[in-house]
Image (tube, rainbow over all chains, first blue to last red; front, side, top):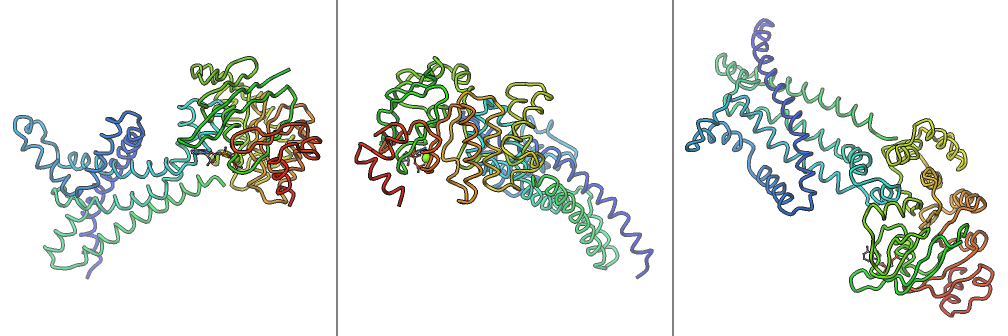
Length: 219
Length: 248
Ligand SMILES: Nc1ncnc2c1ncn2[C@@H]1O[C@H](COP(=O)(O)OP(=O)(O)OP(=O)(O)O)[C@@H](O)[C@H]1O
Ligand SMILES: [Mg+2]
């Protein structure tokens, strides 16, 4: 097997990897803030608001991401009357699906972080005169994010691998090019290359989160 | 001069009546030790004074202001204004783990009181020196011993220039060899005439530093008096039996 061949099949796969990374970055950038917002809603004293937040999380976590992606790409346009306005670029639709789905997971991670903060922190802040919002912003959130960091790291690695679901909605990403090469050339090498690219991405991600965890060790 | 006036305080958690009829005064510069068996309501009483618990009935007057009058509280702003001049030190320190020692001290004056950074910095340096932790200014709480943590907690309370300091078993979570350094700081505060209410199991400290002891049992102040009187000549049977056990 020539080096030329390896280069020739790797180049389109790297092109595909760009899509993978782009999806990953967009999904992370939007789903973390959205997830955090959903966490805040879940803490609301208003039963309706916290109920909506809980139902959202339940539905998003209780159904397959693939089903959600198929629904957004192919289901929405079939809705009578409004369907024709809901046709999106496949990639955009996929981004939307990932954001909505991952926001639910991130919101649960943040909620867990919030619940694990000792009530003594709130009491200490109260006797020092902090208002509720000052307590939240200065005392609670920094601790919540710190506690959530390892779980966020885990979830991000899952996300990188989940981008492979783009294959199912026919957005040409890494796996698409691998599969094409496998079919065309009747060799399994492209699968290995795809695997290595994913491993490299995971490696970089792990290193970044390690660094973050170290930086915010508070020791 | 009376600085805190507590009268007929009552509180229940569900069916359990925890404070039954608590009445006592605190004068300026008093150091009051509150002793009594576990579950007698000491923490609940102390926490009510700084509004970490709401009482069901009775009154608490602080500096001539009603924190609660016959079970009725004023609005939140007023409450905050009244409790503002008090600080509290907790059994489990409750330091902010994501902030360094210095930041723990400075955050409330900066955020809550919007004081100038130079003024706050100067004060934090002084206060840290006072509790003997100048060398730990830039360390995170996780790196401190229990005794050091508690001294930071005291320093943090002092940063707000309180008129009154409340302590809820400040040495109970510490290894015995670390209680001394915390008690020493509290003694210094007493000598500087800080008004303090200290819930404690440290009979030695109560005897030596407090000018008045309250003995609580079962939601009531069973007996109160000077350390000499209460320790050497307790009138009430329950006080007697508690003190006998405490010294065993
Ligand atoms: N938030 C709460 N909910 C229900 N019961 C409570 C609560 N806080 C305290 N209690 C109960 O009230 C009673 C008095 O509690 P408190 O903590 O005031 O006692 P204490 O004298 O401080 O005891 P200790 O020496 O163990 O700290 C106890 O029976 C306790 O179980
Ligand atoms: Mg207690």
